[in-house]
Image 1 (cartoon, rainbow, N blue to C red):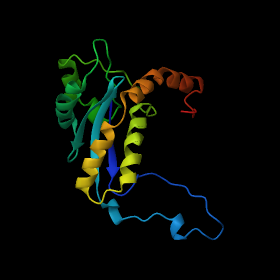
Image 2 (tube, rainbow, N blue to C red):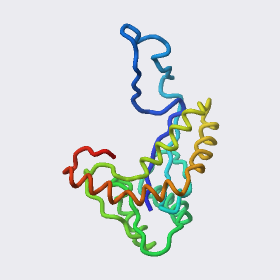
Image 3 (cartoon, rainbow, N blue to C red):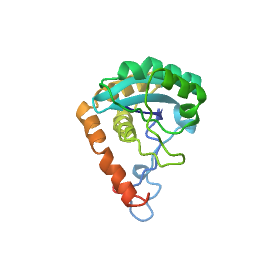
Image 4 (cartoon, helix red, strand yellow):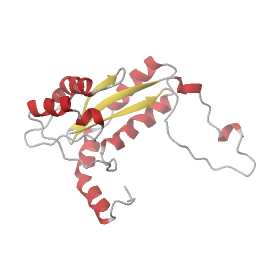
Length: 188
């Protein structure tokens, strides 16, 4: 089971975009992207997934700390489990994930956590699923936060379990490439 948090912007995907243009056409309207000062709003999300499919969605309100993270796990991780015995939980080394309260909660619930080295690259395959969510949400062009909330849930629910299974199945190969390349960039 893997989990992570992300932010979804109301107006578009918060990433760099590139366009091919003719010389002296940089400011042509078809080569520019409109924006709204301060982004127009966003929502923070926590989600998890396993080889069996996506888990429950949780909107994060406010600043998350270890206590809030434990509450999110209790309300969303446990009900999302669709696996049998012998599974591991993966999250990164964010301070709220490594907080004493979080470690105690996970131990109390008998949840084994995948050991993750500090300052490591983000190899959590959930990053691919975040992209599968953000691109279609941006295409809908929600006009307000209520539309954004509704659309992101609809789009997350459309992610097929087969995609999740493929991400989990390819994870070992992905890590093998990273190790072989001594931590440098790979085709993944």
